[in-house]
Structures are given as C-alpha cells and as structure tokens.
Image 1 (cartoon, helix red, strand yellow):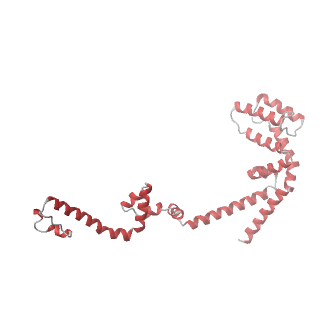
Image 2 (cartoon, helix red, strand yellow; image 1 turned 180 degrees about the horizontal axis):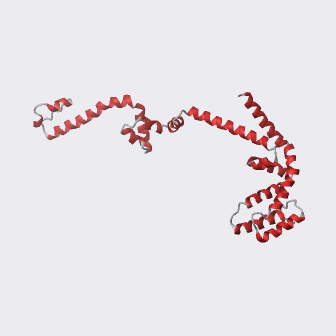
Image 3 (cartoon, rainbow, N blue to C red; image 1 turned 90 degrees about the vertical axis):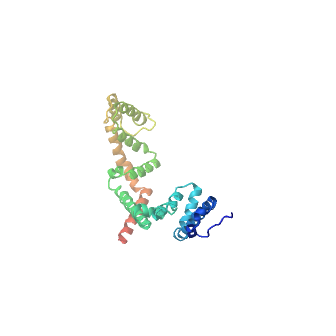
Length: 255
C-alpha cells in the first residue's frame, strides 16, 4: 500500500486516520511539528532580529546570552550584555552617561580649586606647609637642590617614630635614627649643637616616644628660619603660586 501524506495539519483529523500504517502516522506527526516551528518563525524575525544575531554569536563564544535568548529574555538583560559601555553605565547607575561625565568634570574642578588654595596656604606659615602632604613633597624637592634634605627626613622619621607602640621596635628604631642622623659623623648628620646631641644619646638608654623631641625641635626651627623663607622665594614655588592665583581669578570670573 502506498503511504498517503497529508498536506496540512487539519487533514490529520480526517476519517480513515486509524486505518493508516504506523509509519504514515509518525510521518504526519513529524510534519505537524515542523509546521508548528514554521508558524513561529515570523514572530522571531520581526520581534528579535538583532537578538537572533546576538544569540548566534553568544553560542559560538560559549556565553550564557544565547541560553537566555532561547527563553525569550527581557530586553533589559539584552542591553546589559551589549558591548556599549554607556548603556551599561546607564543601567547600573540609573542615570544617563552624560550626567556621569559632567559629575566627573565637576569633581576635577573641585580638586583643582582645593589644590590651588592649598598651594597659597603654604606661605601663611611653616605649620601649614608641614600639614600638607603635597607641601612636604614640594619642600623636600627644594631642599634637595640645596643638599639639605636630611633635616626634613630626620623630622619625618621622628614623626613616624612617635607612632610606634611596640617597646622592642621603639628601641631598635631609636638606635637606627640616631646612627643615621644624630651621632657625630653620621651618614646624614643633621645640624644640631653638641649639647642636644648628647642629651639625645642619653635618652636612648630608656627609649621612649619623646627621646628625639629636643633634636627634632631644633631641626624644625632651623628649617623654619633658614630653608622655609628661601623655599617661598624659589622659582618653583613662585611658579606654583602664579598658577594657583590664575585659577582662582578664572574661577571668580566664571561665577
């Protein structure tokens, strides 16, 4: 008997279906399944053309986007998986990427204003200079040109020494600082008088966080009266103040 094949799914309900061979029935079911898939294809083409391409690419890369698309993932998931940085930024922050860039510019302007004010404050007092991390760096660079940076390095070492809590570390640090900066013929000997040097030596027998106080104070006074005024008159600092003043004037003109 020749196998009769239905041309559409509706004919599968005709009389005489039961009389067909099993092979024909299975063939009819297969055709019905394929026809059902074809009926869904227009929806996929019109509704998710771009998503289909992304799904194919994701499958090749072994990513999870293809699996999500196969289950008709929402567009919010698709946007997060697109390579556009601005789209990702908008979804995560909840605001347009343009606003994020503007906020970054404002932050940069505030940093410039703060640094300009900081530079101008250095000339108010030596304390203001030492309180500023950038000020200490600029002053240290200047002292190198005068070959006297050991004074500032000793002062900074003493500041760090005061923060030490362990008695064992306190004693070892005290000896190291004394040998490097204070003792006669030290590799980086600071300019202090003999009496202060001997007092500091005696303080090492029972090292405390205050054993360098007198030597540190003498060194600080020397820098404040000698090196600090020259730093304020130096070409490098004058250039920094001119730039800071110019930024301050521009700020007032644009407000």
